[in-house]
Length: 259
Image (cartoon, rainbow, N blue to C red):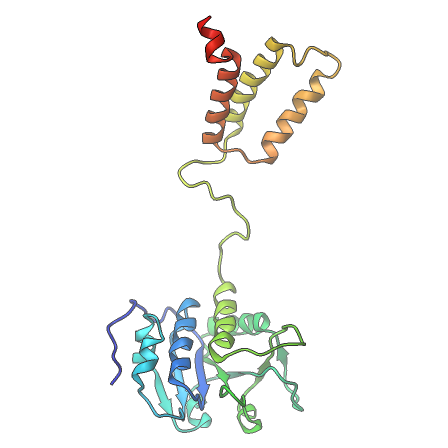
């Protein structure tokens, strides 16, 4: 019994790494892993000798809609069987081991995987049991070792968190979203023409009220105003508001206008 209800419409996109959970202990954690994988565009899940057997309906309940990953999960008795069709295998472990293998961060590992999958090679990532992690025998099947550079005073992660870090780095290795952008909603950053129009309005009224009467300081004061509004990446909506403010200040208080 899986208790599946369809969940999100998920399917593999391109050649993506296989996530291999070695001897997972709790079905809830397997469901949480599927959820983390779906966030990073990973689809292929393999389970090696899950402690409580498979399937377990509680996994679907904790997957938050990543049902299809669990529906297509493959079950193996040994690590050897789970990696037999792969070209390269990465193994994650937070603790130092007396082994000689290339050691990568999660980001470095994701970049290596991208290069490999772009060459049509199949890769997998081993994650060990919740309590003990991977055993030395498991490591002998891996080509690379991944260790997350976390605070050395506390490097404890649950299984889903460990998978989430790799899924995130895998996704970000090809993500094109700018690292910084201005959220403008229905408006847009003002063009030079729009800013020029507002500055002409503002300077005209500042001249009229006498604020720029010091002719020696006037050019520098205007430059400072230009720098202020350009640095702020003011939007066209904000300029329209500022136009209105300047116009109302020129008109003066309502009571004064009536008299």
